[in-house]
Image (tube, rainbow, N blue to C red; front, side):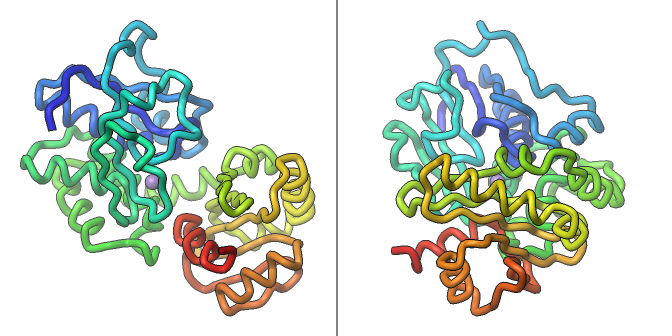
Length: 305
Ligand SMILES: [Mn+2]
């Protein structure tokens, strides 16, 4: 597609996928000679800040004047909510995301590409592959980390052959040491303020009066042992404050590749028990595989309908 002047962004407080996609697509467009800039709305997430520090990248890019009168590209996100006030929805010309439940149709003037791969970074890498275009070392490194992180080192069920092929292409340009992925996993698991971490990751699904927060932790058992009471208390507070019917936490164990669902609402426990054919023990339901929130939502929505 042809662009004039472009501003690339993701959702507010975006994760590593939104961050990497934006920087990579910016490099892709600049290589094609397009006048392109990136802008994010903070605060910066822990995983992104670890990666920024590692590769000396900047989350706060450019000056305000650079951002006016541009067509907008929205990456790793497909809803008019949780985006910056600076985004005029009618100016969004391209939306790329990898969620089954999305609102891309609300961007009336946008071309949309929604495909269910593990990482939106895979869709961006495919743009480079199509043109057989080189990727700079820094961008290759963050794309590689993102796909490895999003697929939990290719262990997540959502991983597709397209994610693997994207990684193969990136490998010729990246120089990151393999052990940095585990270092990143461990570093991003150090949560000093549990309530804040839960708050920052809540996603609301209005249609179902449902809200789910998600954390990825290197050792979930230990984390829950320390924090279960604070988690259950805060989930309840958040539910009441926001007038929601259902609220729960989903945790992914990055070491054991397991999933944990946490809530003390008995009605919701019933729904989750039926959905996953598994039972709660002390308000925790454990499963021997990874489920991302984006996988859980379509499953549970069927039951809430
Ligand atoms: Mn993503």
